[in-house]
Image (cartoon, rainbow, N blue to C red; front, top):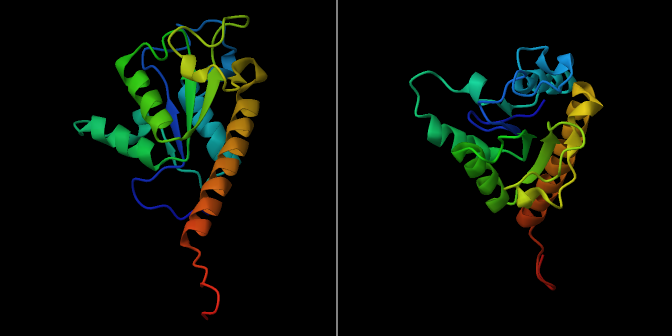
Length: 176
């Protein structure tokens, strides 16, 4: 089990709050199995690895809380951001901010293509994703969760290896 400090997360789920299965009628019914596609993916990821700390604003934010700083702090602690790319993703103020911050932090970004099959990639306004391989929604929620989990494990391994290198002290020749 991962030992995480309070307020630290492994995966950040980014989405446009206006997006629901009604706005994306091409999605298969499995994507609304837990109410909406965000909570469905969160549940699938938690089934794969119960130790994952996943930030989903609708679950983590408390009513009356100062949510803007909570969202930014959660994003800063994550190893990976999975974003639900829909027709409105990136066009809202907050999804654009989340994506820009994740890119600025050099975070691994995994786009989940929730667009209708055959739609142009990347969508207008999301050129930052032009060279990023997306995970297609039509692979199914279980497969998308498996791919995100695998990518998270790779990102965690890379970050842990870099941290170990940073802390390793090599004695200069002739000392020790």
